[in-house]
Image (tube, rainbow, N blue to C red):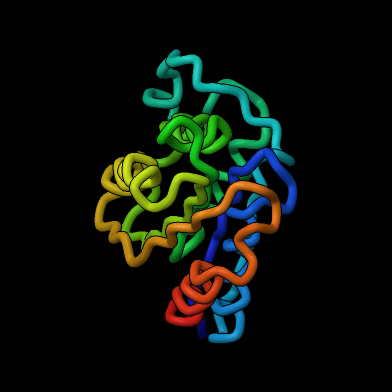
Length: 177
């Protein structure tokens, strides 16, 4: 049986370049017999963490009633987590940041995950390094996790990523899961 892979698409732009790379990763992963699921954050209602810390004393349940509980359950169940983001001012998207912050509630149940990171930016690989560090910081908080691969996609306009090397890189990483 293959691995359970959860891809998180954080782009607010439907069909954007980072989402296109995620689809390539998934294509490769499914061809290798893995089971995939995708969470598209722009389709979810997830409020920012309010730092009340109730989740730390009540078994990991957030007091906010939104779609984050579903996302946490999917992340806990996954063997592999793919985080994707367009780059905004050398950082991750607001949607991904909100999701990561909300992992405080229930995130302690995550252990031993394999992570893959996908980022896209107009300014090339150098512009994506701090963005990758943001995602690495999250993975470092998950005990026993390992970052297995990264895809750097240089593109700006929707669809510009098509035909670039990052497309094959994403596919090959998915295929190798």
